[in-house]
Amino acid sequence: MLKLVHDAATEMVDDPETLSLDLDELCRVAAQQMLATALHAERRAYLDAHTELVDGTGKRLVVGNGYARTREVTTGAGMVEVTAPRVDDRRDGEKFSSSILPAYMRKSPKVTEVLPVLYLRGLSTGDFAPALGGFFGSNGGLSASTVQRLTEAWQTEHSQWAGRDLSDVDYVYWWADGVHFNIRLEDDRLCCLVIVGVRPDGTKELVALADGYRESTESWAEVLRSLRDRGLPAPVLAVGDGALGFWGALRDVFPATREQRCWVHKTANCLNALPTRLPGDAKTAIAAIYNADTRTDALTAVKTFADRFAEFPKATAKITNDLDVLLAFYDYPAEHWLHLRTTNPIESTFSTVRLRTKVTRGAGSRKAGLAMAYKLLDSAQTRWRRINGHELVRLVRAGATFTDGKLQERNPTTTTNTETGSVAA
Image 1: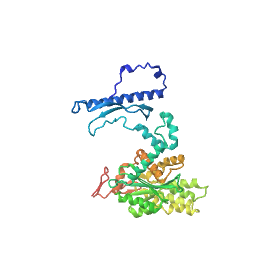
Image 2: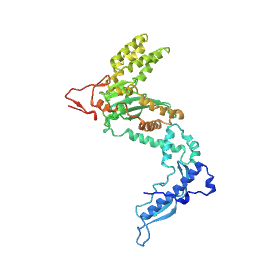
Image 3: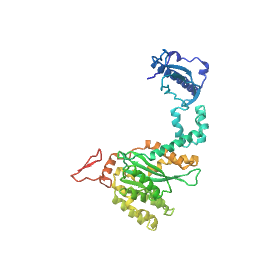
Image 4: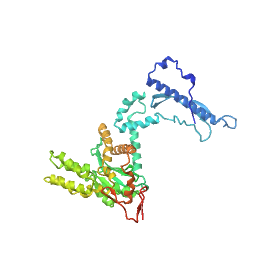
C-alpha cells in the first residue's frame, strides 16, 4: 500500500510568494504538489518491485523514462498542471499505468460525477463553462459537447436497463402513471409511461420507463407485455389514475392484479365538475371518505357526500360509480393505506424532471428526454424509503387476508411465517 509521509522540514513555509496566495490558490498549489509527490512515489514503488528483472545482457527491463507532456487536470481543488513521470517497461505485454492519474484523464472522478448531477438539476449545457470555469480555473472538459456525450451514454444505459432480465425479481404493489413534458425540437410532447414497484421487503424501485403515445392502451400493453415476457410476475395491486389506458392493458396482460384508483386524481376530477364556490366543502367531504377507519365508515361518508352534492350528479358519479376500485385499499394492511391511495411516489419524483425541463425548455429529442428522466429516477430511487409496515408486504404476496387493514386469522390448519411471508398447511 502506498503511503505519503510529511517531512518535518516542510512544515515551515518561508517562501513569501507562497504566503501571499489566497486560500483557494493555496489549496490548488498544495494539491498540485501532493499529486506530483504521489505520482513519483507510485513510479518508485513500481520500479522497486521489478528491480531484479534484467535481460540477457544484464540490463534492467523496467526503468524510468522521463516525463510525459504537461497536461491540465480539473480537480475538486481547481485546475492543476501535472507532469506525470513515465516508465519504460520492456517486457512483452506489460505496461505501467498509473492508478492515480490514468492516461488521458482530464477530470477527477468527483468532477466527472458532479457534471451530470448539475445538468440533471437544471444547469443548461451552455452554462457549464461560465458557471464552473472560474471555480475550477479552466473551461477544459466543461463544454456542451461533454454533456452531449453524457446524454448519449445515458440513452445506452436506459436501453440496456429496459431489456434486463426480470425473472429473479418481484413487485407486490405497482404505481403507474403517464407523465408529459416538452421536447424542444419536436412538436409532440413526450409521454413517459412510468411504473414504480414495491419489493417484498418494502423497498421501492423503478420497474419501467418507456415512451408512450398519449397513454394509450396499446402503448401500456406493450410495456406490460415486455415486463411479463422478461419474467416479471403479476403484482397483487396496481395504483393509478382512472383515465389511464393502463387499466385496459393490465386486465389483458395481468388479469389477476387488483386495481386501486388514485384519490388525488379522483378528487381533482370531481372538483372540476363542481361550481367554483364549492370545492372547499367538496374536498373536505371527499377526504372524509378515504380517511375513514373502515370500509363501512367510508361508505357512510360516500352517502353523505352524494346527498350533500346531489344536485351535481356528474360530480357525485365520479365517486359513487368507482367505489370498488376506490376502496380496494381497505383489503390491505392499514400501514400501507397512505401509500396505496395515491400515485404520489411518481408525482413527487417527477417534480425534478419538470424543474429540469422548465429551465431548458425541454430536452432536445424524445430519446434524450427519456434518458434524462431515467437518470433522474435512477438517482432518486436510492433515496426512496421503504413503505410503512414493510414487514407485512410479504404477507400480502403470500395471500394473507386483511379486513379494514387488519390481518385476519387463518384456518387453524394453516400457519403463516411472519418473517418470510410464506404460508404452509
